[in-house]
Structures are given as structure tokens and as C-alpha cells.
View 1 (tube, rainbow, N blue to C red):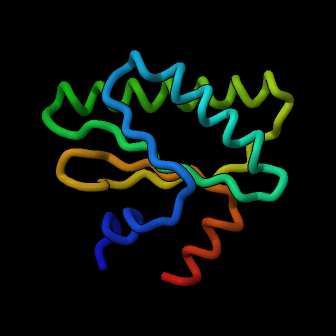
View 2 (tube, rainbow, N blue to C red):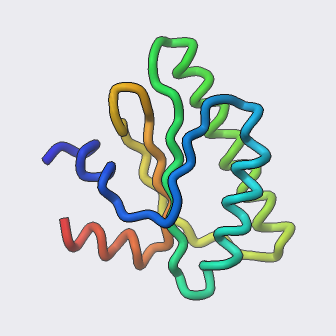
View 3 (tube, helix red, strand yellow):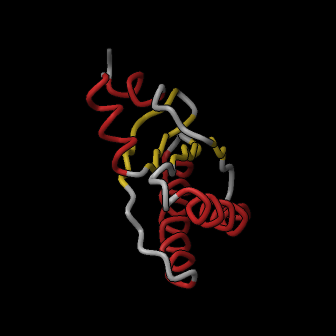
Length: 114
């Protein structure tokens, strides 16, 4: 099984399809809340889908990804939470890049089972 097919089946609690930079704040708020609710049990898992296409679209995806990552880290600090998140970036399908964020135990269990 190819890497992208393998990670596209990674079990997550929520998948967020981000189409533009105008969604970044909403996505960050959702991720921080999800992490707050699930980090104590080490059950955080989320997939973010970013647009894939021509060079301009790829640049947009990189910009969105950096903004989400920075916002998430700042949001967790404001909430006095220490991030303990594994990340996997992969090609989800022909129209999306995939980005999985998960607590280490979830990531390790998936790696053992695949």
C-alpha cells in the first residue's frame, strides 16, 4: 500500500477541509478546543486537508499550513497546554494534501497495525 493511501486511512476524530486563509482562525480555534478536550487522555487526532494543484495553489497550502501551525502553538500556550503532537504530512488525493495531527499513542498504535 502506498504511503498516501496508508495515511489517508489514519483514524481521526475530525477531518477539516481548509480551502483558504480566511478559515485559519476558525480552524485554529477548533483544534485548540479539540486538544483541550482530549489531550489529558492522549486521544487527540485530527486530519487537515489542504488544497493541492498548480504552483499557486501549493504556495497557498504552505501559507495556510504555517498559519495553522503557528496559531495552534500560540493557542495552546495561551491555554497553558504543552503540545505533545505527532504530525504526518502526505498527499491525500489528487486535489488535497493531508496533514494528520495526533497524540503519540494513537500514532504509535497506527504504525504498529499497518
